[in-house]
Length: 593
Image (cartoon, rainbow, N blue to C red):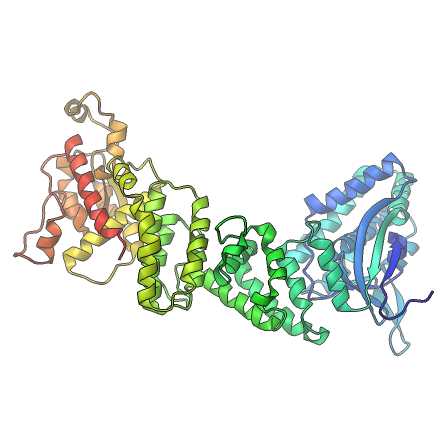
């Protein structure tokens, strides 16, 4: 029975039969991503194991999906494996040449003559890769005109490594035994079997691609999402859509951000709903659920109605996402509160972006108000060492309320009713932890953040300034141990027997920021000898250790002095007094506005 236009065709292929046809990997597909040490070596080892166990048995490789266009098969699924088989075929050819064996059959499976639409004979490679900068490079591999070149694209480098790995593997397994080489090749050539599914239309081919890969066998959610979006447009719109998709992905790749994490945050921020996780009152998303959620929520995402608008939304969110990770607002302007969070939480912390994506279109005053209070929340929870898993759940849940905020009054209510109660729960734990806090309790960059914020606040009060300084200026100061790191007999003699010096010197009350030149000049000196350096510091919190400024009455300086203490000696008791003093200042800094 002959095949009609709307029917699928299923062909059982070997490598020999496969490369009687001509294939192309279109440029909208992902590039070659197989890694030599993992995918290529494993495939070769599996084939060789099957060959050595029983060379009469076939080895099944799976399926490929194609559509036919003007006598050439366009690979929709299976392009990674097909490309690798082609590279292995080229590797066999080169080794055959080294042994003086005829390569006529291999040559015709790698390239041959075909007729073009006008009936003219043209030389055509059996496989052509159309994505960026790979067509010529694959042809160089076919001709064995390659070497360890510099500045290769990622895909070309992986092609090079795959080809070289194949040659090495074949040589290592056959041990220069020509008969063994030919036997292994014939197994590869005639016993590897796979099913080629030829779909009548590109849309049908993409549906098969989804069915095969959505069950965890092939691609991740990003690849499946790309396929889903391409299914929504006509073939003539592929180039335009490919350009838009590349722009979106490039934003994340150039910033070395993980697309899957971005997609999780994109969903819980742009489509906040408790139904994202129907078994719990949560607005969360697991990586494994990304594709299923998007494919089942076309009514929310509207990608089926306007796929270009959906990619624009992805791109807009990706730009904001990258900006937020770098301490900038949605428009790309530096935002001091976001910079503070980086210094507090670390450059790899991303969970707060769940809230920021929802708030990305807030007016500047609303956005700043939210981020300022978010910094306070994060400080309390990181300082008390809350488990990391709480943040995504908490921020995702808050997004179900934040999505309805349209003005400052509503945002204030959100902060007071959602964020403040969580901080209030930490009040007792925070106080106890602060009174006993030492630099050993948190990472050094967080200790530096705490000292920087304390110093900034006191300087602002002292100067009567309403402008928040850049925290990076303070983070450049060195952390000075007022009680020296190495104890002298004189110091040890003054301490009670139950006081451990290693703990005492690390207490927050014993730490201050100091300029590097001053810090380098005082070495391991006693407090009395350090006083001149402290008094010379630009930081009033450090300067006030030895003397408070005395300028008039009821002014910015005198009001600042009410928060501070000056000391004429230094021991375990004064360290405890200063620790309590810093706690009271901290309550003024990290509070809900």
